[in-house]
Length: 130
Length: 246
Image 1: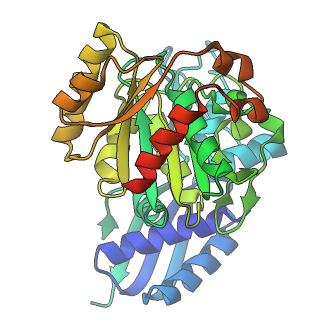
Image 2 (image 1 turned 45 degrees about the vertical axis):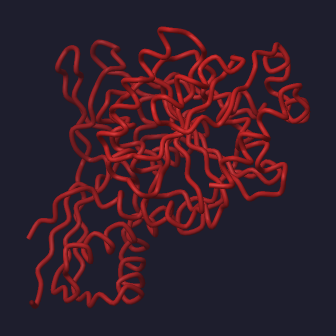
């Protein structure tokens, strides 16, 4: 799975666009629904930071667990990515919205629900030396 | 310090900037043949040895794979710092059906927008000559995202049939595009014989040409060889010549 590289490049471009090139700590919250390999993501972040001329010291990658909410009946539930079949997990890894093709609200059966949390990158925060 | 805005759009912009010409194929109404025209333009361009791409961003009703005769299972992407599109001849191709197995996908606007940003930021198109992006009909969150986030990178092509109702909504779409800062707007008249040429030119859009109605298109759906031998191929090639000359 090398989706991590694409995510890492988006993050580094984002940091650079905000004018930060001297990072003491980078904190990224990642939804576990996307099954991101944190080791690969950190490796990609460091490689790309070098490539884009960003000094990057500490990297903290924080898991965000999924929370889904039905737009019809209001029921809230979670999905454990470990229990998703391999092929669906891979689909969701690349395009998390693919989950809507495979899951319904467990209470009312509605297809109209929202992934409130745990989808993908939800927060990027930096501490700088500047 | 929390950094706001979506980081994916930056990579999307960077990737698409490497493509020489990116056309977003739009229609203000459904059923005007937008997906068919987008697919034919990409297919014909690739058949003339131009490195070309087709990106299907209609998540709810993707149909370009049906036009190309590809099943969800047969479309394969390579993974290399993101995703390398599927290749059919010289055509580079991406559709979401690979991940949804062509199952129904009901997405609210914010989810469709997020899927769009994810897809645009992970597909490595390389340095194509032409990329055609097929979009859902009307103006939705996906269109607004494309138009405002990728200004300067994409150019819109409007498709319409020669009908008063279609033209009325085309005028609204032109107005939205101009308001979003697009001065270069292209127009293709589908299933027509030039009836809209005067109106299009009068509205200040570039009339690329017409594709007359032909039953051969319907009969050729799903068969690339037949699609490349359509009786309207001269019209399609003429439109491509104008697009590549710009």
